[in-house]
Length: 100
Image 1: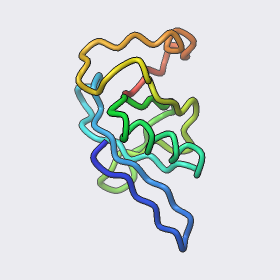
Image 2: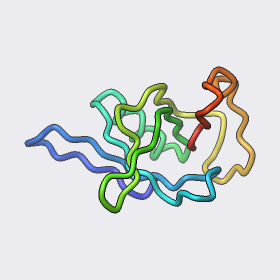
Image 3: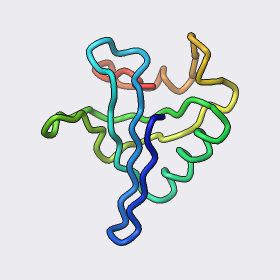
């Protein structure tokens, strides 16, 4: 994660992530709810990779993951690990790859 941002007066929670397994994407911004943002903060603190699912949309100059689902932290891994096997990836639809 390269950015964790909370704008208190408007209730926005945003993170910016480097995408590891999609060569056409370098970074994606994600708008999170408060509970998902806490997961992102804990992942950042523990240097564990976060995971989120949803379709990426281009808005202006940025790629956004809107209304993410399955936001979680992979506590058994480090951001330095190159190969991460997540059992939940198997349940993704055929047209959707995990992002992180």
